[in-house]
Image (cartoon, rainbow over all chains, first blue to last red):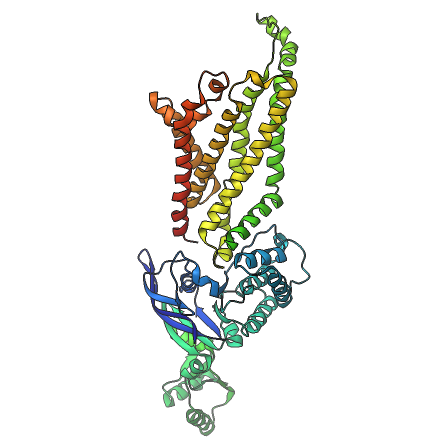
Amino acid sequence: MNILELSHVSKHFGDKKVLQDVTFSVPEKCIFGFIGRNGAGKTTTMKSILGLIKIDSGEITICGDKVTYGQNLTNKHIGYLPDVPEFYSYMTACEYLRLCGDVTGMKSSDIKTRSDELLELVGLANEKHRIKGFSRGMKQRLGIAQALINRPKLLICDEPTSALDPVGRKEILDILSAAKEQSSVLFSTHILSDVEKICNHIALLENGNIVISGTIDEIKHMRSEPDIELFLQNPDDASKVVKAFPSAEMQEGKLIFKNASDNQAEQILSFVAVQHIPIIRFERHEPNLEDLFMEVIGK
Amino acid sequence: MNGFFAFLKKEFFELSRSGKLMILSFLFILFGIMNPAVAKITPWILEQSADTFKSQGLIIGEITVTAMDSWLQFVKNIPMAMIVMLIMFSGTFTGEYSKGTFIPIITKGLSRNSIVISKAVVMIVTWSIGFGLCFGITYGYTAYYWNNSVVNNIAFMAFCWWIMGIFLICVLTLFSAFSNSSPQVMAGVGGVYAVMYILGMFGKIKEYLPTFILNSSSLMTAQNKPSEYSTAIIITIALSVLSMLVSLPITHKRQL
């Protein structure tokens, strides 16, 4: 069963079309990477899912319930971590989680156990200070804890790792991976290595359109062949190679063969051997998301 | 309802942790003490300045201070306490909108009505307790030094001021629903008061305006009867309820 479904969602602000016919779904127990450049419409999509923005057309359902703008009923299924989470600075992490638990109508004893459990998970169990003195990373971690307090079916995180240092990023990714056991996670980012590390489904948003979506394996197989990079000792030999293999592109002192099959790799190698062309390096690159991303957005 | 009480608890918690509770308690108690104190020391102050006045040709005779002077101080000082309180609360909504602290709470399913109503309740409770303290202290000291019975309609006069505070809190809530900063909210509340004040200068209409109920000295000297204020009081209450009712749908539509 799908936890979240977006069907033909469109939204414009003034003349600018921010979302155009956006359709995708998030299945149970999955980490869904929602990728896009800055300004691609990721936050607008997430706020629409939360009922904080009115969509122009289309339908959003969460666990089968339709999302209505201004009403927050479907939010009982959701835990949300905004891109820059802000909490009441005069409270401690524990007090804030109690407020969140009370707001969602949890029992007092349950709030206590759940808070202890989550503060342990996010590494804030020993933090007794008020939120006022928290670093950005600590706020993100508290943000995840508050989002998970009522065991939501869907955890939505808006660029949770963007502003963090490498250690902070790794910690957040680990927490999100652990959260998958209880909730589906929809997490937006433009850091593709984060997506490759933890996501099993992705959708790529570009100019308000979903240009690719599917499981990470499906997407990687969209580009079945790797690229070859050939570094020549003598740059003058490049013209010979390009003549024999017109698909080769010259770039910064190297020749690139896009989507090169095993057969083509063999042909290239035998060509340089037969022609006695001295080479420095011959490399095959497994396609990664970044290549695919660049290809799709036409860069 | 759980969400409403949880948020109400948070609001009281904020009032105490942010120091607002302490400042406002101090202020209302201070004014409560000052009202009779200033009245009490007025003859002494005038005596001290008698020589200066004499050189200007003014001769000060014997001054008799009564409970009336203490209550006149009360009606002079209570607006100041009210203004300070309104300024302190002017950012209660807009501060949260601009920081984004509502977002995690609203996305947990808390209704926006609960937020608006609980914030208004906290302001009204704070005003009522603060006003009660100030009134009680003034009443107690005035009774101790003089005789409150020479002043007419004290309780009704106090009730009028209390209602005015609630009216301005409701107007503040209304302006908070669509304003982006606390100065905008204050300008809105101040603007509403200014408009009423100006309209009050023109003939008969003044009897229907909320500002009419602040005509305290006429009440205390029995020039006016409480019944003459009933229309203005009903209008003030109606406008307060209307402000609250209008603020709810506006808050619903507000983009976060």
